[in-house]
Length: 118
Length: 125
Image 1 (tube, helix red, strand yellow):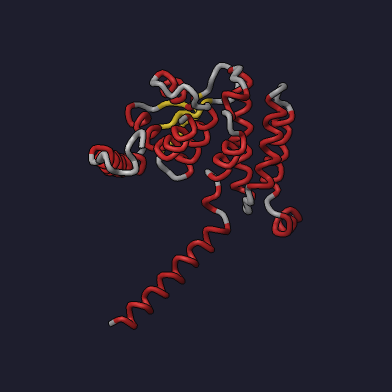
Image 2: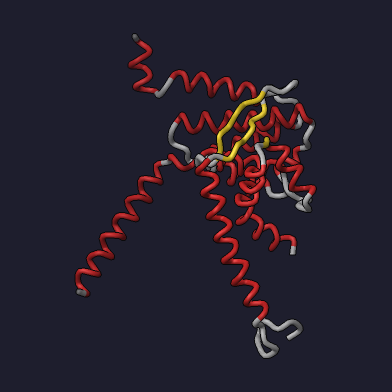
């Protein structure tokens, strides 16, 4: 179960992070903290960090380096126009997938092999 | 003057300097972060196949920064890497692979298949 969850999350995490950044600019740890609050308890901070870098390399965010009291400056990520377009694409794909999968579940008939307890 | 043709032979000296600085920063991390960073760095070199110096230097810079941040914040290694170190390392590297030589080959493949399909269509009509 946990493993299936991880695999599914992998495919949608980029969209989730773009959606969070659409609400407001943030740095890596803020995003991880927010996702943990929302129930993604097992999420590693590095996973989000790597994903933010990927998003940055693909040009979906603008990055500002904000000095911190200790350590290296924090990178604050702001969604740009390309990022917004990517997010819209994500929602379209998500609506399609979620709709189709729900339909599969609703049309499951007692005779089908997917029937629980069969 | 001399630096110019040396760079033509060996790649950018500036990048070399940056690379050395990054490796020094990596070694200077406190335990256990240095160990984790070193292990990941080693894996990057085997798995990465990153051909250009600029991409490599960018990647290593980001990597060192990640661990410096973690060391200052006291974030545990496990919270950074998660329960799948290999998956973490490969995701990290793959973020930087877009300028790789394989991109050229990918483009070549797409073009070749495209022209094959066109030929097929030509025959049908």
